[in-house]
Each structure stands twice: as C-alpha cells, then as structure tokens.
Amino acid sequence: MDILAYTMEEIVDPTHIIEGERYEFLLDIEIDEEDELYREGGLEIRAIISKKNGEIAIANYFLIAKADASVLDFALEEDEEAMILAFCKERILLGE
Image (cartoon, rainbow, N blue to C red):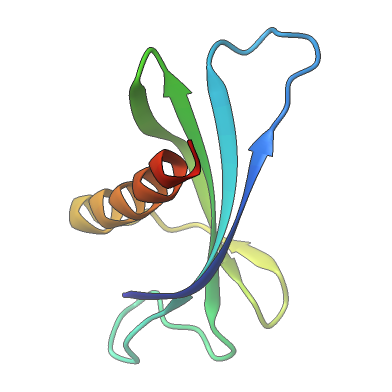
C-alpha cells in the first residue's frame, strides 16, 4: 500500500464534548492488484485521528471505493494500520 496524496483537516468540536483534538485525513492510496482490497478506480481511506494528552491514535477509519464512493467492509492489517498512524502522526506533529 502506498499513499499517493492526502488532505488533513482539524475537526472542531464547538460543544467541547470530545476531549482532546480530532483530525480527519483523506488518504488516496494505491493497492497492488493482487491484494484483496484492490478496486478498479482506486481506494481512499478516511481516517479519524485523535490526540489527547500527547497520545495520537486512530479513532476510526473507513475504506472507500473511489469509483462509486461505497464504504468497504474490510479492516486493515496491523502493519497497515501502523503505517497509516505513523503517516498521520507525522503530519499532525509537523503542523504544530
């Protein structure tokens, strides 16, 4: 899996119900054709990243087929989740 492009936006909670900070990442990813996640037209990952007390973690994520914007019912493998988290964490820390 390779990340080709991304957008990052801080999610503002005007009610202050959610503790810490939240960021939404939209990652344009490239998947090998042999991978079960591969979809014609490509994939995106919408990841919600939380930052609380200096800890940064994946709060949730969705795999989206770009061809029809459908949400896929798949989970990433541990190493893929770790790669996504490392990528997002680096961008959050660079933004500080």
